[in-house]
Figure 1 (cartoon, rainbow, N blue to C red):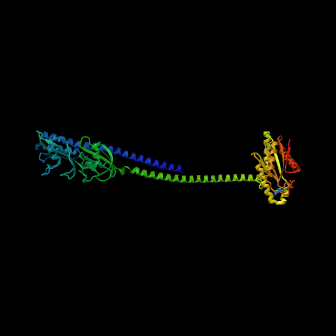
Figure 2: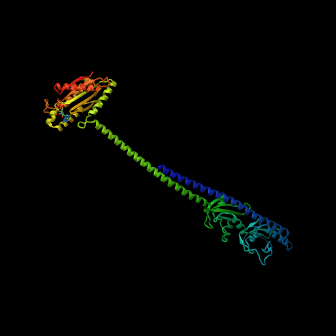
Figure 3: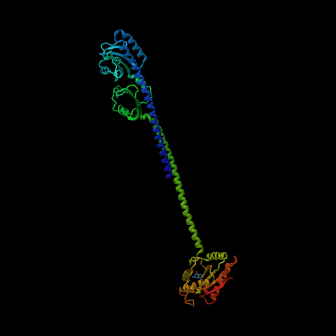
Length: 494
Ligand SMILES: Nc1nc2c(ncn2[C@@H]2O[C@H](COP(=O)(O)OP(=O)(O)OP(=O)(O)O)[C@@H](O)[C@H]2O)c(=O)[nH]1
């Protein structure tokens, strides 16, 4: 189960990691795209304003050289019309005298009673003696009602005093059309702003945004402190989160920025991520169900194996018990005749192998028939139990085997025991039974006694040696009975 959980976690981890990586790649690609576009748009703005400025430079040179006398104006008018026709971005070209009166224009005629002395660019040049171009805030053209960006230069008298202003205007629409030609998504944005932070053109366009001051915004703040860059921010203008790339235009006091909305940038990634989440979830469900089945089957197998193990143990125990029972005498708890026969054969083989002596003691209860007759069979059984216990107690070595040979006859096998040792054990058995002092009125001794026949051999022949030992012990027992009972007799097998 742990393994399955680990694999599932691995899948989830891999999915998170790969989605995060894809997210990162998507943002990096968008950064590259917006940076490249911004560079391109900055170049476009630079080229546009340079073209306008070049015309103005020529106009200033001509006006200052040829003067503003009526004779010079038709040629100038023709030249201005040609320039506007050549340069599509230019809306119109104008020259005003020091009072703001129209002197010449690229338009077909000069409207009556118009004066531009109130315009910002006119006031700027009137009060500033520098000869550079001046890009003004967008205004609505008095002649075409279009939003235009004024670009102007100062005309000087020979003595350097203010002689008027030359002006060309670029339609905001020119930039908007150009910006619209790029696929930056519904929520993408491009803006052109003055270096002071006033918007000159913006896609998507809304006239209320023109001249809006964004100098306190993140783009201008970062541009001032860190130079050109890329940053993700929420627009103050429309509240959309976008990735902005921004930079200054090289030769003019302008700033260009391109922005792709975060939603658009991550649209493909989001779809891929949803798919990957579904795939991972599907995999995990499959894996978890396989894992579940597998673990429950393993559990089942383990439980079955445990049950089998327990059953096997119980069977083994049962077999052992059965074996023990099959070799045990149920009355006395000693080994039975079958056990005795097996042990005798085994002890004889061992003696033959090791060339060690083997002794056998046959024990028979004296006058036991009378005992049963006097005290009854159940008491006789109890008496046999006591004798068996006493016999067991009298044996010291672990290899000594006591068994019920049959009826009231008991037997003891003593391995690696010589005649003297066997005699000592037999005598110990006899005296310990006598010491029990079990009353027996049928026995002249007054209590239960036993007769013991002892035989000993040094096993030499594999066949028949054991039964000869039993015969010899029987003979010795017979001798003990005939000799008066309650005694030990010895018979050796050669
Ligand atoms: N209570 C009881 N008696 C048994 C059992 N096995 C054998 N006997 C009795 O033991 C008696 C053996 O008698 P006998 O073989 O004639 O010999 P005895 O009376 O002991 O006389 P001697 O052996 O000559 O001293 C029989 O009466 C058997 O019934 C037993 O398991 N329980």
